[in-house]
Amino acid sequence: MSKERARRRAEREAERARAIRANEERQARKARRRALVARLTPRPVRFYRQGGLIARRHRAQNVVVALGFLLVQAIVWLVWGSFTLSLAVFVFSLLLAPVVVTLAFDRRI
Figure 1 (cartoon, one colour):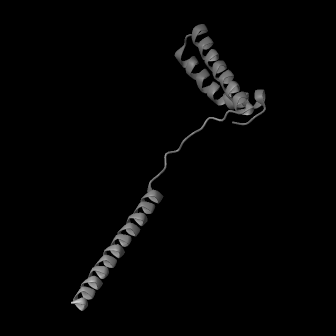
Figure 2 (figure 1 turned 120 degrees about the vertical axis):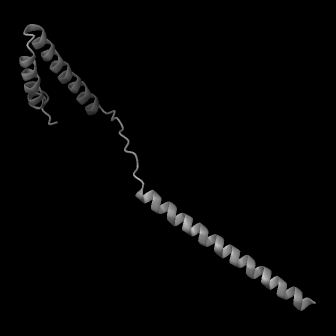
């Protein structure tokens, strides 16, 4: 009788060990799959606004350049009113904006 109980206990322990091993293998596969998906999934790019003195100064300078650009466009439109001349001034202003930023604020875009 005790030999029978020992055999059944050994079978139960062996079955439990197989179940634990199978569970560990499943968990390892899940972890590998999660790691692979994490590696292959693109992360969203987050842009953070810098808050230092230089960043604030550059933002202010960009606002000045944008307002000047819009002011030139409005003046040309109101004074001459010609669509072709306004388009030409628009293209010329786009080409001239980096030069104005570089010369007026001593920085490169």
